[in-house]
Structure formats: C-alpha cells, structure tokens
Amino acid sequence: MFKINTSFTRKLALFGSTLALATFISGAAMAQTTWKIGWTTPDSPSDPYAMTVHYFAEELEKAAPGKFKFEYFSNHQLGDETEMLQGLQLGTLDAAVITGTFIGNMVPSFQLNDLPFLYESYDQAHKVLDGKAGEIMFKQLSNKGIVGLGFAQAGFRHVINNKRPINTPEDLKGIKLRVQPSKIFLASFKALGANPVPMAWSEVFTSVQQGTVDGLEIPVPVIYSAKMTEVNKYMSLTNHTYNALALVTSNQSFKRLSKTDQQLVRNAARDAITRQRITTAQNEAAILQKIKDTGMIVNQVANLSAFRSRVPSIYDDYRKSIGNEVMDAAIIEIKK
Image: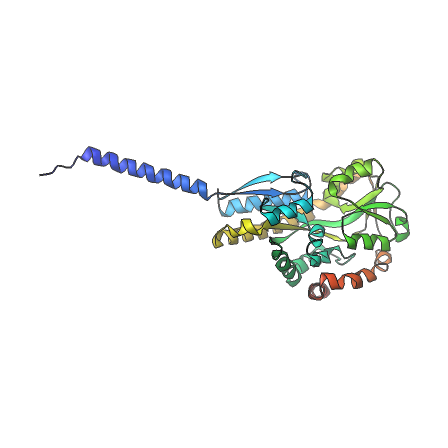
C-alpha cells in the first residue's frame, strides 16, 4: 500500500500558502495606481491649489487605503498651466489643478467665471458651478481628452499694485496691470481703464519686482502664499472675478481605472472640494490680516456699481463664445 509522506505534504501546503500570499502581495502592489499631479503655485498649507491636491489625495486614501499613490509637482515643475493641459491631453500628466481661465483658452465656456462682477457671493458661484452650467462645461472639456472632477476655490480676485489704492475706475487709469492670458480679462480691464498686460504666472513676481508691470489681480490666499506682499504696496478689494480651480484628470489615466475606481475618484474629488471651499473661506480673513501685517495697505472698495457700469458690453461680446446654454443656466441660478 502506498504510504503518504505527511511531512512532505505539510511542506508542500506551507509552500503553496507562502506562494499564494506572495502572489497576493505582488498583485496588490501591482494594483496600486500611481498618478503624477501638478499645479503652478507653492506647496503651501494655505495655498488653495495645494490644498485641493492634498485633500484629494487624503480623501482617496480614506476611501481606498493604499490603492492610489501621488507624485506631487508644484510651483511650475511641469511648466505653466497651458503646458500642463497639453500633458493631460497626451497622458503624460495624470491629474492637475488648473485655473479655469486657462481652460477657457481651450474650451470657451470656461470663460464664464471670468465675466467681471458676475457673482456677488461664494454661494452663488458654487451653485452655478455645481449645477447645469458646470456640467455642460465639463462635458465640453471631456471632448478635449480631459475629465473634470469639480471646481475648487481660490476666491475672488483683487487688484494689487505699486501706484495707488483703487477706489474708483478712474484710479486704474494708466496702471500697467498683469492679467491672466485671456481675451476676456484684457477686454474687461481695458473697459475699466487699466493698461492690462497678459503674462504667464511664472513671470509675474520678477516683472512686478523689476517694474515691468505695476501690479496684478489675484485672490487673497495666493497673494500671501506667493509672497506678492514683498513686491506690491497696495491691495484693493475689488472682487472683480471668481477664481475657480478645476480639479481634472487625463482621460487616458481615468479610463485605465475600473468603473469602481472611477467612482472612487469622483467621490474623493467631491469631498475634497467641499473641504477645500470651507477651509479657504475660513482662512481668508486670517490671511488678509497677515497681508496687512506685512505692511501692505489694504482698502475696501465702497462702490462696486461704478465698476459694474463699465462692463455690460463684455457680457454681450462673450455670450456667443461662452454659449447661450451656459450663460442662461448661470444667470437663472444667480437670480434664484
């Protein structure tokens, strides 16, 4: 009768278990998704771009521990926002936080947020961008090979400069002001009386420092995180546009995920943006005080209607490029 070698059997079983465990661990490691994610501002705890990135990573880790790994590229390490958009389209960059204005050069409906004095509050902006208008904008962006996950917040943009405080449109006359490379920003500030100069963000600090431009327009958190207080004397709270930050991924990277993981990414983005908006709004008053503490002279603009009265033609001129559907959806939401 054939006799079973029980010692050999136990060893074989142990070997099989070890092999299975090794295969499981190897498979788990292979299943981890590593994404390169980029943004153009400093990797600072108070910076709204950086905050969006890190909250997104935290929410994904919370939902799926160890499943996603991010490689972070801040402060122009991957070029300017136009270059990052190209990387997303090519699939050489997996995800990014991009200023909506730059996407507007690719998908004109994103110019909606650049319309001067469109929103009176953050709540208005959130309802528009989380609603039908935002949905249409992201659908159009998907046709360019980029998946929109949501709009984070940098806040309202304000004018800072080295000439004088801005209280009326007349105060802008002759001031050479860096604006984002966008036709709508150029048209808006020309209508307000300034001398707007389009310029990539990477060039701004040195250009103000050297006097190539007199100042710029920018949200409160970025003024502080980018140390613009070192090269600008005056800050005027003009609230002229809402700075929306699009959290986006490459369509190529997104499609490589399972349907389950795609939903994980969307849910994490939603939760991260909710956190980011709340934190950014809460931080704003404290950051504004820090700006004042640096010696920067800050003034509240008492009469924004004088500014608004100069820009209605901008809405008419850009309605066609932004699109009636997006414009009407936004206006309906704002009027509720």
